[in-house]
Image (cartoon, rainbow, N blue to C red; front, side, top):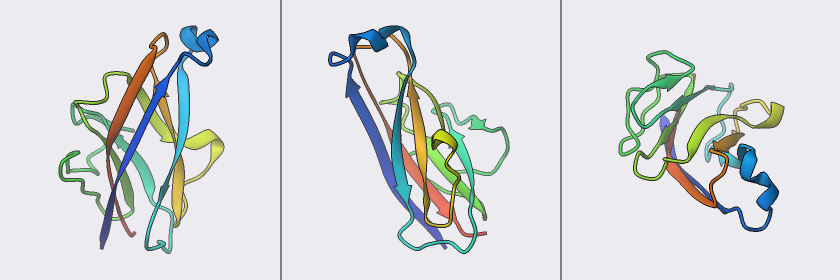
Length: 124
């Protein structure tokens, strides 16, 4: 069984202008509605379809998210991710059967940014 969902982030950098020279990181939860018995492996699928880390585990798209068994595939919507640098598991948190906190890294020097996409997870 595969669960799917959406994710999104945005920011306006006028509150802390000192961040203009640094990469901006936002942390967001992805919770699984039906807890898994084992933690899946996180893979970020970039707008061009490239996987990070590399592999062939996520054969869907942002419009039709899919994940192989034991995988959490986080897809980036190509229209809204010009400011996106990377997506990883958040600040040392591990992916669990209940979900994960993801880091969404945005390019430095931007006054505002938005990134969004979808995700799919399939039990091991």
